[in-house]
Image 1 (cartoon, helix red, strand yellow):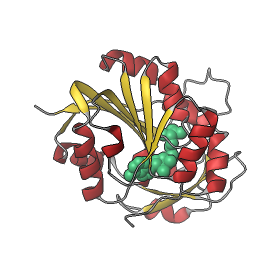
Image 2 (image 1 turned 180 degrees about the vertical axis):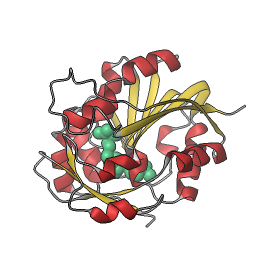
Image 3 (image 1 turned 90 degrees about the vertical axis):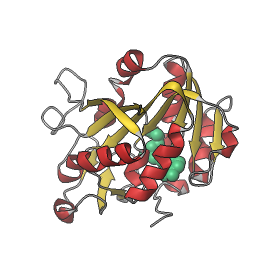
Image 4 (image 1 turned 45 degrees about the horizontal axis):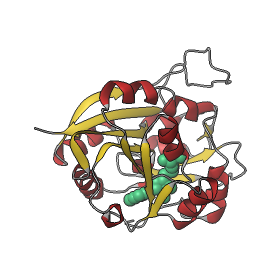
Length: 241
Ligand SMILES: C[S@@+](CC[C@H](N)C(=O)[O-])C[C@H]1O[C@@H](n2cnc3c(N)ncnc32)[C@H](O)[C@@H]1O
């Protein structure tokens, strides 16, 4: 369970590297520029769980001086291939020493916590990340809503996994990313809003804002449930006082 990571896989890294912001993914990123403008001051950013660098390059485009870290070698290899000028570190789980005590205005984590098991592991990682923040720094954590595993979406399918309906916070759930040429299910850990708030509280973080992005129908995608049910949740966090 501790090393649970279905992303440490060359074929998945290859497929993920082709993914930009289509369909349902669009809603995870659409509001981030505005959210970051509202809550973040300064330009240094750490992308925790950068994968093939999509979220790091997104931060760069938003004007941040961004560094990406990940525990999956195949993902970091791909990120460096796509963006040879970028800074990407392969780290051991929870080992932030390659960052050399740098402090950041923003730590962005997009979908990373979907794959991190147990309350204790999540608390430890959030607590350690808090130590990488400047005094007014923010963590923005984008995670899957538990509802994503129960419905059909423009970019995902869960209909083959009816057992997801019975999953409780902390259980493994399965979901297929459609249209990327890798139909093997991704295994995630479902985690409720209540459980996330408990993690943040125990990690010494205060929840500043929560966003549940919905599509409004004007987007160039064929939505399935995205106008009614939010697939993602975005948490803005700061050090507690
Ligand atoms: C779904 S991918 C998202 C990648 C990227 N943030 C994006 O939006 O394209 C999640 C990534 O989190 C990484 N990850 C999982 N657990 C991690 C941990 N403990 N520390 C750092 N990265 C981790 C995985 O290896 C994977 O590359």
